[in-house]
Length: 468
Image (cartoon, rainbow, N blue to C red; front, top):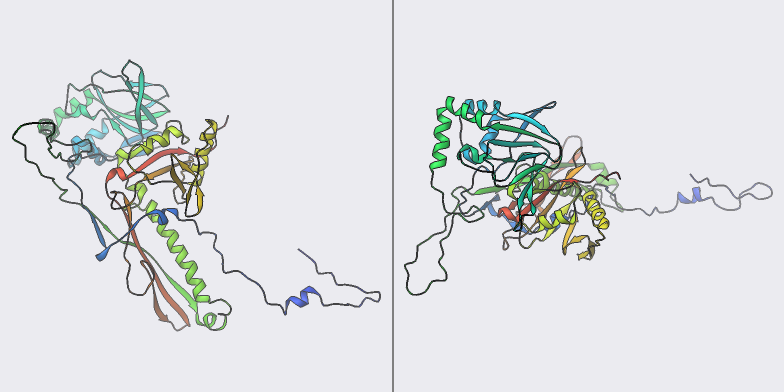
């Protein structure tokens, strides 16, 4: 705190006006109202926005034959875990099987096992004798290279399953060796327990026999119905006819919204509007808060948010915890034309530390006049809306964008009544008996993933500093 000391003369009288007194006559130089919650909102700025007439956007896709590729969920009670019976329908062989009594009986036959890192759960070539549900931890899939060397083919983590071929094929063998990477908890259904259940549940045996006997439908590596094409022939052979089948129940995205009612007392609007318009400033900050909510919903909304709408085949896991260049390369190679990464600032810092450890210093890229961290020339945009869990882990998103590239798009509708900004309107609601002026402020938006490989997620990204 500064103290305005008066200028004293020999006889104690003031010779000039004090700054405290002078400031009463001076015009204060001031800023507009500031708001700490405003972020860069790179996701909103990077998404191509598609005009949605009628408020609904339908994503038509080719018919896909793969089913039951969801994530299995569990109930955790202290150190004990059990699978939710209906979650077993996420297994392809039990998709749409609705006998809850039999599913409950199957769920009760799973046995919990807590394993230490480095434990071999199953070896390549041995008969599949158990169905595995991963509750927590990481499990590596290990195969053999051309010269017999071991190669890592991927990771399994919480919610994944393995060995489900046992349900329909008694002669199935393990396609890879699986070994724990971290302390891991799994639920195991042994073959003996499955046989006992099938003896007592003819409905289940009939279902699994029907699945096993069903003809395999031709499909490409993405699970889409195959389009038959001939090539390399000569002469006049008879060509097979074909057609492109479509998904008969495509997903539809309805525009979501964020709303609030802005209230301003008429006395404030009448008497304190100079030099700054009070309603304009209130509205500016209110709209900024709505845009922050929009960005948060685009990431975290359970219906259309990107974190919750990534295909499970496009989700991978960090191998060691922190995001390494190898992890980012694996995420990058899962799709063509990746346009951007989206990561929490702490995840970007953790990736920078891992690059520094390896003596790698990626060049930043320039976007809208700003230098942005990048990997392989793809910008890594910061997004504080990506959540960080209690154990200091988060996720990194990679995406291809735009309708033309079958990517991720934002959805909105412009030209709405009383539009103030694109897809945002401000409506005067009136003045109540307490002289309060009210405005309804609404913002309409959503997001869509056009094909599954347009969006990928690197999960279990550790952002905490590791102790030496």
